[in-house]
Length: 312
Ligand code: AHZ
Image: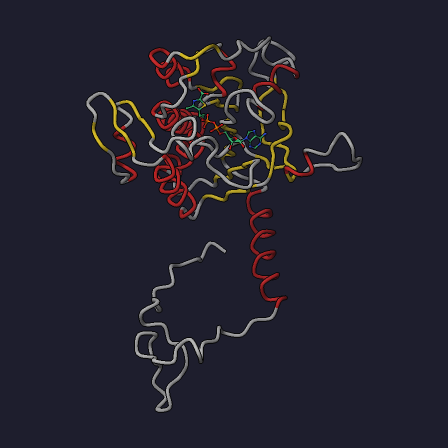
């Protein structure tokens, strides 16, 4: 499964469609009647089924013990994954994303507008990714938010040590007693409890839908601000009495919000680092609206904090 390579043998221009009479394969460009004689290589339905299921179940088996689980594949979660996988190819990183489409709120710049604004110094992250932008002085503008998100996503998915489980929700946390804490009720986080998102959404009207699990010594939660799914892990920390209460996201103030999110990106409870807008719920930070530099740099910081914990 990890042996995927780019198909270098054939391109659309030299694609061998049908053997020529002399035994030499013709290319698409050479074939005058290419569409009349066109046919794909043969397949049986079971081959398609097995090609998918064998890989998925191998991944489930392999990532049941992960080094790090990232919850949420929005701009912060994907930035975290990119930094971690780039620096540490030895770590096995599972990303669990509730939506079918990863990317969270980063497919548009704000409202329904295309351009994405990043305040400096987050332009350094774009340079690293190779995403072009226009420089407007104190901030830069990517012409379409989807260019940032699709580039980041394609790089993240190309790392051999990352598996994205999308359409899968984290619906609880695995906990263990934390003997190093003074509070006897304190826990450390030791992994996540998962289910197909569509199943998670039907716990109220269907019974017997027990979940699955991923063990990991470190979880990084980046589930965004409160909403039907958002701020999931920190809300669970409150209900399991590991946090007294949430501060609640405050109104919009771009000036203070972005600094606050990056500065406060940290291990909130042993084994659980929180990044991105989920943090605004923990500490009562302002929202920043359609500027994305803090999401990228909170991801970079979450990755650095994670490596400190892992290497402890
Ligand atoms: O589907 C969610 C989204 O893709 C996913 N998610 C949430 N709960 C989950 C759960 N299990 C698995 N229980 C879950 N996945 O987490 C992702 C969060 O992405 P996001 O883009 O909402 O959050 P972010 O913190 O990466 O970026 C926030 C973007 C915002 S909101 C905002 C404002 O309103 O001021 N400003 C910015 C920049």
